[in-house]
Length: 334
Image 1 (tube, helix red, strand yellow):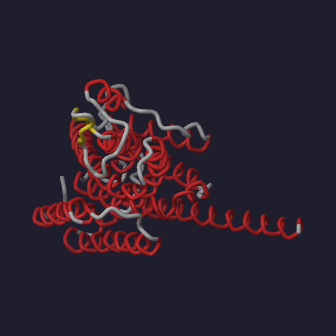
Image 2 (cartoon, one colour; image 1 turned 180 degrees about the vertical axis):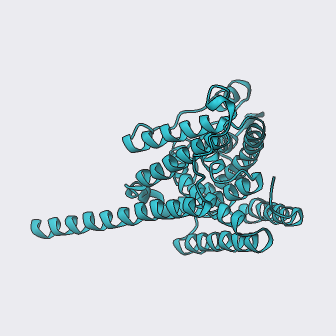
Image 3 (tube, one colour; image 1 turned 30 degrees about the horizontal axis):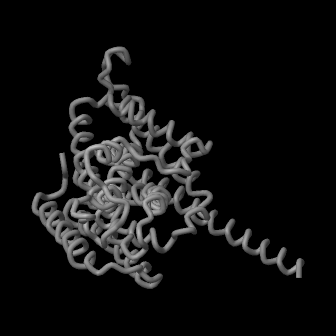
């Protein structure tokens, strides 16, 4: 049950809906390649907006929901960076013109949020009825964390999912873009442009990432409102991160390690919660295991901040060390 007032939730959804309408139909109608200054300004705006939103939630709902939001937002934001690698590959594979990429990301992320919203509602309903599902979520996150450490989760190529393959079979899709249009006419025949496929590719591929991130955030809060708003604020800054980071994404060498710590921690936390509220008949006679401790919300936030912040700092220091070594090598060669 949500601790957040209904009026605040309604106001939040109205404001977010208005933002997406403006982004898609006003800003999106002016295709351009964002400058570095514009990207930094937008990222700062969305980060400050998330911090303010958490502060308002603290005022209207209390400290616990606010800390859960901050924990979820930081986790989702960090996990969303992985999406950028795939977005770069999708844009390249479909040869999306640079000037249209911001608009494509706007629509793709909107599709992703709608699909994630459905996924969150399903997850919340399952958790409400079957508390033992935390065992599955926890084990899945621990396995994912191990894959990140060992590199078993890497994929350098984009592979079309079933939705895109089915779409190609039932629709006529041209090979050329026609601005932002989804439909075009060639030799008197109507075709869908590749824009439609790119929108769905980004949206549905993002949902594949949600199989990692949604169980992770349900390990931090069971409130669907907090889960959804954490996802919204995490995805809002992805457009600008895409243009700002670009080729620098591979410089974040220690980010997978930081994410693995976060996912592993949340996975263990989920299993502990499942044991604490156990109802499985073959474990302790179907009774809760009282001696299993509950992990406080503040500890989750502390682990997330230290793991992600430490990974980012270590990546920056290593990048500087490599640049310094490269500069010394060039100096000696001269």
